[in-house]
Length: 163
Image 1 (cartoon, rainbow, N blue to C red):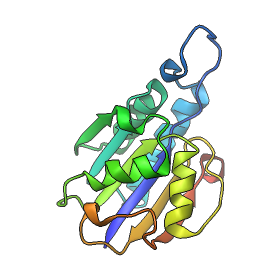
Image 2 (image 1 turned 90 degrees about the vertical axis):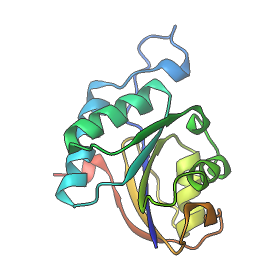
Image 3 (image 1 turned 135 degrees about the horizontal axis):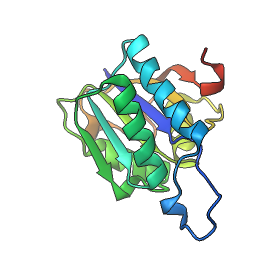
Image 4 (image 1 turned 90 degrees about the horizontal axis):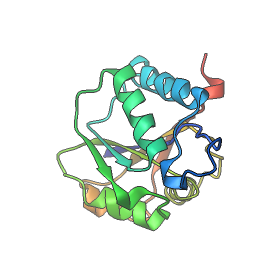
């Protein structure tokens, strides 16, 4: 069994219209929510063994805030392959990760994250910004993951529901 966590990046700013989508930073709310999710990981005793994040500014900032709030000292990998990735592309990124890591977090973007959650769990709930899902997967190695793998949704944590 493996545990996969999918985290949508925090709320990003649209203030500076000169910035490319890739370069948009987090808003104040986005920074706060990313830190809250980091604290949640500690409170729920569910720190991953590995975090893999999109290189987009808002995803990197989300990851940095989460890592700081959680005191996470494990490996963090940044990859361009997660920027606006489809669910199929996300599966390829996950399948390429080390087998020794039992619990992995992906920090990325919609619609790919929602599509992947739906294909793995048959659950069609929306993932607003900074939402986290936990999915238990019946696989022995990450490379065994397919879009059709029947995982079990543990929970969806949304920042607005955390208090």
